[in-house]
Length: 215
Ligand code: URA
Image (cartoon, rainbow, N blue to C red; front, side):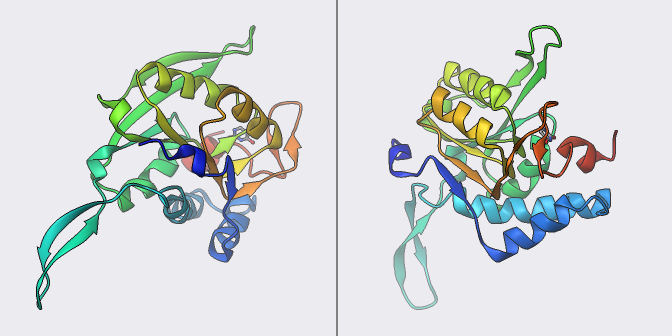
């Protein structure tokens, strides 16, 4: 599959349901449980967009009236890659829509001295080169860890990769475009910028903390 160039580099999903749910997620008064529920719901709406030009295969079925050749997604051809830890919140919702997708995990932390991402976990399905690979991470902030995660996926053989996030900063989009112009990004919003601590603003805070109730 080599359809990535036909897909725009950045798609902001401006659907009213997505924007409504995102507003509640941004609200500091939204509880952990509600935040998780909203993330699950919004990830399904974003999954609808990111899978828009997925390849279909077909299958012969019998309707009550006749036999027909009907289109069908081969979920086994998809790999969902969660960038730990916050990626798991997006992963669950997408998996509900494509339950047969294969799943992988990439764990990266930021070295306090070099400020560069360091890998601590990497487990992905085999045959990545034959799959549509969707990497998920709610916050595309500086883009450094996202670009590093995509480097690792390409190193493991992936050639058809898309990136799904909830919020993107212009800096992160630019970094991804420079490092991986072949990877389309789908997001619910393109925010204003990054604070000097690397938080997206207006943003929603630390996505992992809000999702898991940690501080
Ligand atoms: N990661 C987060 O969880 N929030 C941000 O604003 C930026 C990175």
